Image 1 (cartoon, rainbow, N blue to C red):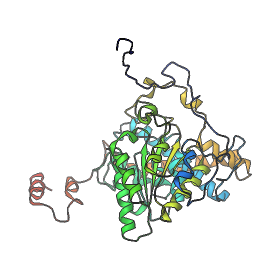
Image 2 (image 1 turned 90 degrees about the horizontal axis):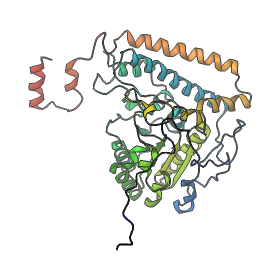
Image 3 (image 1 turned 90 degrees about the vertical axis):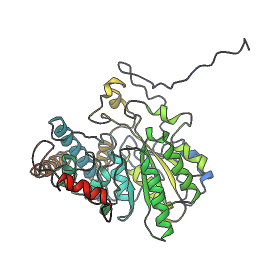
Length: 410
């Protein structure tokens, strides 16, 4: 026993820390168009390699290449570009509003816009998303009113949720957007259960579950995969790997699995990794996984390799745990600039038209903000009634809550 080395406790470390040089040498990026595209009905064991690669469509020259090139017209792509531009502009205005004290909290999507915007247009209109707080693109790409989103953030008298949710935790049944839960990963179990219920009813609607990389360490994630694989639930299980949880890098949650997608392999679930900053690749993989679910072939786990360019939220300071220049060095680039480059390359867009579109979108977002603020902000204007806290929970209000409502005088 004296020759046995002492045990050592291992704590994974990111490649670089504040003050250091960003290092993404561990991110192996295959050539655009080089990853094969299996048939939708292929067996999971025939595509294990896809859990360790990255599906890409757009190359550095702005061309769409390879077997995953989707059937999207230039007009479709221009709409997608505007969706992403709108989300980024919306983020900038709401971030500033939070700094001005008009709302208590906000979370940006900078660098991740392609994931939710492209996925939404791949879904059917009646399908249901179970999102986290960083998928507002699902609403914007489905034409949900910007004013309603802002009123929710301000918790004013026109807040669709009447002040009962933290800012950015939207909900819209009509838009297939299930209520966001601040307790992360609960939506994974809910999505699988909803998808199972849809199958039991012989319905046509599928579900999409969303978590970030850090949330894959939660027990709900693994419980959901057990049920999804066992009952072949018609669900797409999305993992947005943006490299960082609120202050810990993705290696903490990933553990020794190599990739997050690889976690699906142990459950017999097809698992793919996709370039989350490539709008065309995200759409193509989403369509593939959605078709698989709709054809009763069961769940698919999709990992979107992207990067959180901004802070985790307005409560976070990323300079405390990562190099300031890390975002600029991210090797997969900016999703807006990449799609813009592609559209310019194929002659469907120009720098002049892009500048004009930026101005038009800014005018639209500013007008929506002005309208929303006429209904109030955090410290001004009318608020939802205290009576609202007693509504929409029970079909018939229990006696103890009736007494509480009477005590409040509403």
